[in-house]
Each structure stands twice: as structure tokens, then as C-alpha cells.
Image 1 (cartoon, one colour):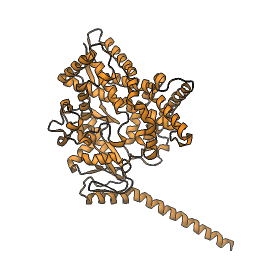
Image 2: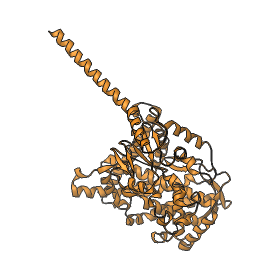
Image 3: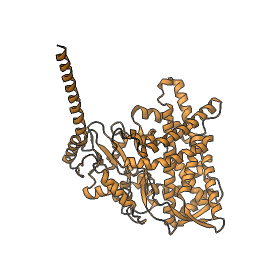
Length: 522
């Protein structure tokens, strides 16, 4: 009898193991093949075109190869930026038209180029959600830009006071200190001949890094500036991760990249924990918390805890660290790139450089200190910055995902599909910008953004749109105006013969080989 019971138990165990194996095998097969093929069939029935699904990788390998080929060849300032910076999107639209889709691994990405549909996607953020980042990317940045739902609502509420206009006005003198320090460095380099040729990229990166360090971390700005250096090292590892299909559990393998990413992650965590601890102790000692972004955020959290109780405030220490990382990367990288492309384009268009300088000198004089009110008088400078953001937006694409079947315009989107909003492609579309869409013409913004886009406002979204519009856009524009005005007060500049035009995406759109200019002292 006992033998029969033992045999019976073994049979049950074997049956359970086989059932689990069959279930697991089906789930893997469904993930890798059945589900993607069903989604492809659904999209093609609606008149959408794209490559056929290829097992596991989809279009990822083609995308990586096209990026490598594009990066191997510089272009001229008159050539197509989209073809070099976003080669696979350019190739897909050219081959299949704007109503097309691409494959990112096992997931189809629909290209959405109609501004009305873009407006709907960015407005209805409860239906069209941010992608859940793979763990490698989350180690780099996991702040407001990558969270959804109630967590996003809570973080946005707590962060908003830090970006009120009155707070930004108080930060302007600190920004100006960083600008004048860079000016002094350039003047010293120009002392001998009155001019000098150099790559402006590292100087502008240092400038914006210094600005965000001072405005985000106050007296701890020198320690904060080390965060940027670590993040620069992380970017290359993140790009490798973004260009490949993430396999669940891969981050636990002791690969060279994984070990290095973990090492850099630990360094940033330690640095930011130390900065936050110092700020908390300073606030407890009665020091002002209203002069930097971190202090304002911590004060906002403290006030919320007093009103609703500590357990009802959804922002932990790790959350604060995540937002600090985002402060740092988004605040530094975006503005640095805008300034770099602005100097390049004004070097290539000396007439606009002259107009901008004349405006700055008229408003500030040659040695006047810019303030908030007179920065708002810089109409030509504002037009130029808008045109730079059109031609060289920091991000080339916005990605969203639907988690349940939904409609968009006349399309039925299957659950799990992703939506690609090709910002760079739209910014060069003659339908919205006219026949001179590829040309640098700030005059198009003379009567404002609405007029420039023929009321298709969602055709121009350098800072996003809708509820999730970039919380730091006013900060970035204020800093860019101040920095550009300060440079124009003291210098003129032209392209160096050694300048190589090579726009490329390394998380943001930036010059692959730097920006070598010839700077002259006025």
C-alpha cells in the first residue's frame, strides 16, 4: 500500500512538473512569437506597414547597424539631420510612409506624425503611458520623467514649488556667477591674440553643470558637480542597453557592463545621500531652504507630511535621490546642447548673430548685468532659441505604451503596442514648417509658436506637451537666455575649418565630434 502511495505521489509530482513546463513553454512561445504575430496582423489590417516581425530582435539589429553607419560619416550643415541622427525612422518612413510601424524586440512601435493625434497621446497620459524602463536604465535615472500614475502625481505636486517663477528669479544671480566664470576663462584664453580656436562643448557642459549644481544643491554644489562626471560615464553604458533587447534577469549576470554600472550607481547614491543628509541637517538648524531646488523639495515634503502625516507622502529617500539625478542630467544636458547648437548655427549665420548681439547690447549694454525683466525683452534671442530647439531638439523621439486595447484616431491599438512620436522628423516636415523647413530661420517665430506652426501646436514639442510637459522648461529657457546673452556681450564667434558637422543621439541630440569654433574678444 505504501509503495502504491509513493508511486502515486511521484506521478502527481511528475504531472505537476510537466504542467508547469508546458505552461512556461507556452508563455515564452507566446512572448517571443505568437503575440507579436497577432499584433502585426492587427496593424496590417488597418493599413499600417512595416517590416515583418523577426524572432526576438525585431528591427533592433537593423537599427543598430544603421546608427553605426550614420555615425561613420559626417554631413554638411545643409544635409538632412534626420537621416543621420534618426536613420532607422528616416528609413522606415521613406520605405513605408508615415503610417508605418517598427519593431523594438517583440514590440511594434507605431509612428504617429499627425499633430492632433500627438496632442491626444500627450494629453491623455492615463491611457498612453511612459515605458517601464529596463533596470539598467533605471539605475541611471528614475525620477519624474519615468514614473506614472499616482506616484507621478505625488512627485509632480511636491516638485512644482521648486519651479515657480518667483523661485527661478531668485536663482538668476547664482546662474550669472557661473556664466561670468566661463567668460573669464575664455577671456584668459584670448589674452594673447584676441582670438582662440577651441571646442566649446566641454566649457558649456561645465557651465550648465555648475549652474545646476549651484541651483539644485546650494552650498553643496562642488560635491554635486561630481554627480555629473559619474553620469557622463553612465551614458555610454545606458546607450548600449537602449540599443539592444533587454532579457529579464540579464542585469544579475556579472558582465563587465553590469559590474561597471553597479559601481557607478553606488557612487552616485552615496554622493547624493550625503548631500541630502547635509541639507536636512542645515534645515533642522534653521538655515534657509528656499534658495535651491533640493531645499525647496525637502521643504515641500516636510509641509506635506505635517498636513497629511508621514505615511501619506509618497516620496522616500530613494525617490528624492531619483529626482536629484533627473535634476542633474536633464537640467545640465538639455541646456548645454541647446547652447552648443545655438553657437554653431549663429556661427554659420553671422547676420543673426549680429542681430542678437545688437539686441543684447541695447538691452544690457556691454557690461550690464542681466536681470529677469530685461531677459524677457530679448525677442530676437528668444526667436533664435526656439528655432534651435526646432532644428536640434534635445530628444529626437517620445515613446508611449498602451497597456490595454485602445483607439487613437481611427486606429485600434492592441494591448502592449508602443507609440513613437518622432519629434525630430516632425520638426523638418514641410507640411507644418513650409518649404524652408530645413533652413535656419528664426523669423518664423517672430509672432510666437502658434503662428509658426499654423496653430498645429503639437507639431512643436521640444519640452513635451500636456500634463507631463517638462517641469523645468522655464528654468532651461531662462538659463539659455542668460548664458547666450552673456556670451554675446563679450565675444563673437565663427565656425573653425576643423569643425565637423555630425549630429548624433547619445540619449540627447549632440555633436558627435564636438563644436570647434573660433572665438573673438569684442
